[in-house]
View 1 (cartoon, helix red, strand yellow):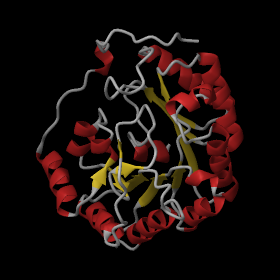
View 2 (cartoon, helix red, strand yellow; view 1 turned 120 degrees about the vertical axis):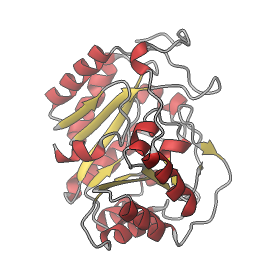
View 3 (cartoon, one colour; view 1 turned 120 degrees about the horizontal axis):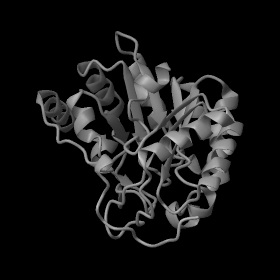
View 4 (tube, one colour; view 1 turned 90 degrees about the vertical axis):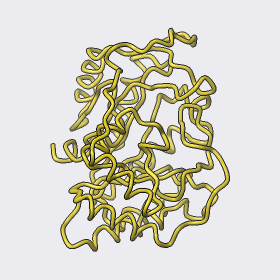
Length: 288
């Protein structure tokens, strides 16, 4: 188990990202502004934002930029909630069409203030994308809906191709890293989606928060038991000094070892590398 002390602030060379800013990058930014849309790429300060925007893709963050929870790893703002935008599903679908996306990834802030946790808005966005003239595969990355499985069903009834809910870290660190969340509740959400059988089931983990590898191996087993088919593993990067510190930077070779261990448990597809995030190369992973 890693001791909880800040490591040197200098990032290792494999975490350095080239700046990107071509015409496609500017087009994506312009469309998001035009339709008043948010992306997790921007709100969470994703290190892959330049690459993804420059290739003409983004992960849409629905239901506003503010979150009702205050996880210590996350850069998304904790603040006042905004009313749902009735035009948001149509605007997301329109942007998907303009960008000519083949695989759309939809996530959200956690909206514990809403009676259904925002499940209805997820469903409305999926339906709007389904109404486009050409087929688009849809992946959703949802909160836990406070364990209310009827709300998970609302999302699944809209028929996403991939249902993703991130476990994020090992159970020992939940109280510190994910206040308001519960490890077993997240597993229950994944198991429900797997038992439903209509969508591929996906989850994600960050490493470098102070977990041990043995703890990670136990999580891999739990995920496989819950029916997870697709897994992403990436390096945690602390957004600021106010957030949870980075305890360890994993070497790329260690990510390869983690992927091998996860596959040994039976998980079908594992994307594991320092800069991997939940929706990084999501289309390619879905098609594996």
